[in-house]
Length: 163
Image 1 (cartoon, helix red, strand yellow):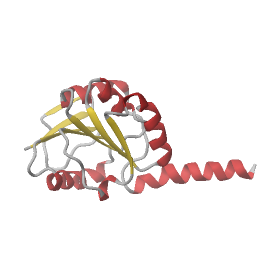
Image 2: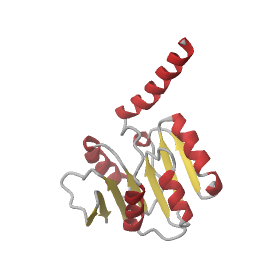
Image 3: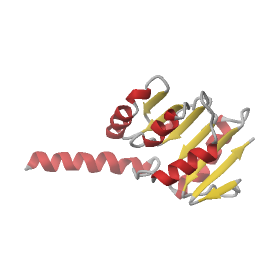
Image 4: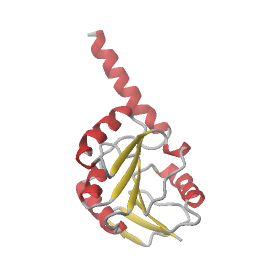
């Protein structure tokens, strides 16, 4: 019984600590995922940066469209799940275990996020810092960036453009 409690405690710890750096794991609904990828309008060969790739759903869907993906995930369990779900596309999908706030992000054509409200301003600053010389689009599920107007909104998905 104590092994079960220890395993449960580890799961709660792993999934709970992620909230301190981004957002808890919450799978993106298929409808929102389709809308987000449509809004980004990435072409085959372009690069999607997914901040908090969770179970790999978005990475797999983008890879099925020929898009290259770099996904960051802090939860080691979800990193393994993502890598398994995207194994077929391993030549075009890279899942990175780590904190995306402390990393330099690769060149990308689009960014996908499902963060919490209080991280959106920090995200805006990081995008401006990382992509000041490069146009990039961002889709956010559910949460808006303060003092920025989305260029398109549909079913709780917000599209932003940085130029």
